[in-house]
Length: 142
Image (tube, rainbow, N blue to C red; front, side, top):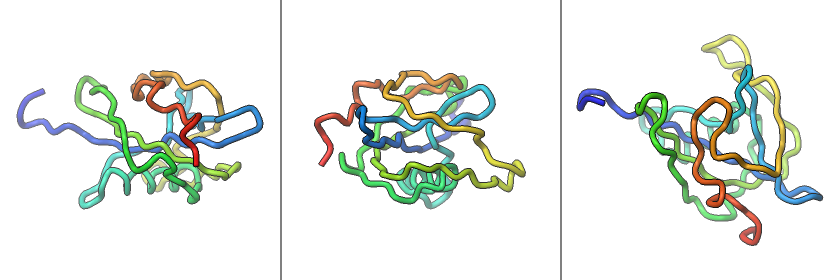
């Protein structure tokens, strides 16, 4: 990447919910890809503010608790080395996801959700997530 090219920063939240069988991670589907809620930071916005805004916009979830602190982990560069994503871990008790219309595309960004006890280190969109061992909430919940 040349000096004139700027690294694009996205921020998102790995949303977890305690269910009867243990912790469940929330995944969002866009076409054939699964990912976490995230988006590019806007001018004057901190990565945490971006992560909360994007999660609210993409899922309708407003109740997020940062039981493990407001720390984040960054991915390795992806998208031909031009982009990184910073993820936070937050807990919610919300069980319903509501997709809102993104005015830029005229519809929701995502089409379905799934909750899973498994956290892969690469989603099917090809953008990496931090090592899964960094995000195990077991034993850390208050």
